[in-house]
Amino acid sequence: MATCPPYPTRAHRHTHWWQRSWVRYGALITLLALSGLVILALVREQTGTQGFLVGLGLAVLPVPLLIAAFRWLDRVDPGPWRNLLFCFAWGACAAALIAIVANSFATRWIATATADPAGADTLGATVIAPVVEESAKAAAVLLVFLFRRRDFTGIVDGVVVAGVTATGFAFTENILYLGTAFGTDQLTGDSGIASVTAATFFVRVVMSPFAHPLFTVLTGIGFGIAALSTGRHHLRRALLPLAGLLLAMGMHALWNGSAAFGEYGFFAVYAAFMVPAFGLLTWLVIWTRQRELGTVRAELPAYVLAGWLTPVEPYALGSMRARRIARQYARRHAGKEGARAVARYEACATSVAFLRQRGRRGRAGADFTARERALLETLWHLRGVARPALDYAARATAPPPVPVPWPVPPWVHPYGGTQGAYGLRTAPSPYGPQAPYAAQAPHHPYVPPYHPYAPPGPHRP
Image (cartoon, rainbow, N blue to C red):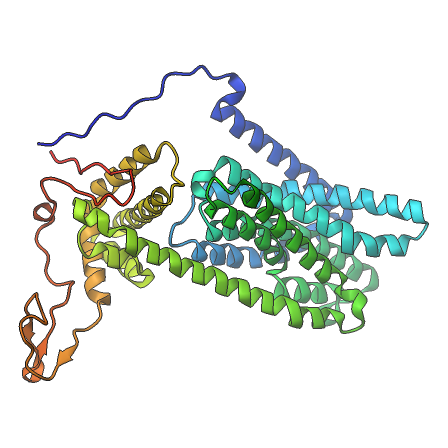
């Protein structure tokens, strides 16, 4: 029986108390909690208790839809929930607090210096606010990029991280605007569709719930492209996020300044810029997700040869429809635990494919072998539940055999064929009955030397 070579272990290194993970997590949670309390007090002071509650109830409506949309985009290689929770909390608490304090201070300073309060408000909305708010939201993307680099591997990750951060920011901002509008309605006695609250809700929640996410997603795309760059292009890695941030500021300034373009300026900017930009970015993200699925189909066959995966799994794992069918099959036959095991199997297999691609391109870290080994061992542990489900999904989604209406020489179909309906000869499906899993794994695992990191073979009792 072949044995795996031992892996070198890191020498024990003394760490200071501020370098320990629980200290960092505690400091971060404390910072976000204090920011949340302060922003809660500031918003409640400006809107009143009743206005705050009304604004909170209305502002929370688009949040689940936006979070679900970004989570759907991240279904190929989903990131951990703790990253999304941090991003939402940063946007709703820290970024919102920075924006309120900095915008108020800058607007008052400009009004005092120029003795023109109206001009200061316009300048603050079109220049100060975009710079401050987009910089505050970009800080969360930067932190995830620096300290959760393993989970930040491409454009989709940048879009999701930036979009969730902006969703949290828009949530707090909507509470403020809707609560203030409700207070105005109380003073004027307006109610119903003609009220300021209804108009604010229509503009901010119905027409443009994606406005803030759209701006910050440009920053996320810059970080995502930087994540795809090799280590040699240091200047590109630094300039791409900055370019995305400047584009986000420019679009944000255009959106805030649309009211100065006349009576229909808002609708003109909305139709001419916001909707096309939203459609273009949506297409870009979906196209990128399809490329990720192509990476899964291209990289996993190497692990089929090594015995880690069955021959049908690269096809099934490279199709979102097949993945969904596999989870449904596991839920019917093994319950919720089985569905979760299949989902984890799919996520680990996708991570292995992306890790192998980075290794071939020379962008893998020093811990490549250890990470690959851990992921493959997880796959091997979950194979009992996941393989039957993926085999069923591959059969259910496999293309139908193509009938050939004339005699076919044996060299055309090297794997033989079957006698189909009406006497037509059909090529065999590559997703036919498979041998038992234990019989498929070769005794001597082999991986073609696509890159210098050769994965170890599966453990067998």
